[in-house]
Image (tube, rainbow, N blue to C red; front, side, top):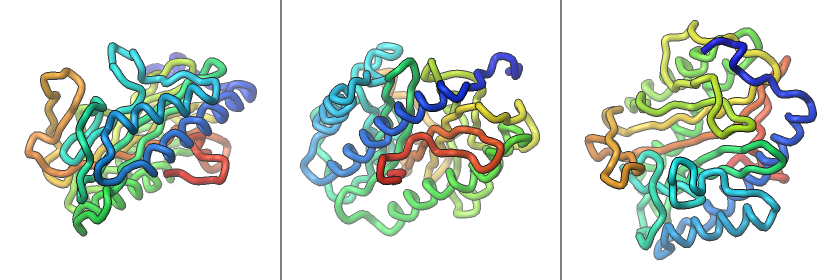
Length: 258
């Protein structure tokens, strides 16, 4: 996409995005703390909505494109867009929770995958690699780099552990709209796409499969699963491109990212 289509945020708008990001990150942390055997995905969603609304914000996802909930709660082979419901979490599950909050004209967007009780060594490793791949990626989220440089760094790290990155869904710009240009892929090749400039705000969100990267969308038209049934994990933060290191906007008041 042409650079002129990408919104460069003013100092006032950046401060508004920090506010939205804090609420969003706190909602993610609350949801993650609820992940334990016996809790339903609906209970997590309800708590996320109450928390966001109690801070004067609106859940970004509720009603977006017809999505019926405030959080996406995806379990095991479900990569993204899991619809909360009566499903009870079980020991050994891994649970990806994606949330967004809108306040002051701007959105925050973040996600993380959490273990439910004791999980397998492989599941724990997948969660760790997925989260780490985000940090590897944003080393390239600097002024003058290309957007695809981020994706190449994510892909290289993920594939070094024998995992794969989803190709059908990608990160994106965030701002007054939840999804804005540019598209932020989690794969290369490097050297393509717009150059990063200070004031750009983007969601970098590796979606990783323990097996093959192909996915399919279930009949509910939302829940997306790995085609081979392998475990999956998801990690996302909204970041700001600066003149130096990128700034993570979806961070809690005490500095936590998950």
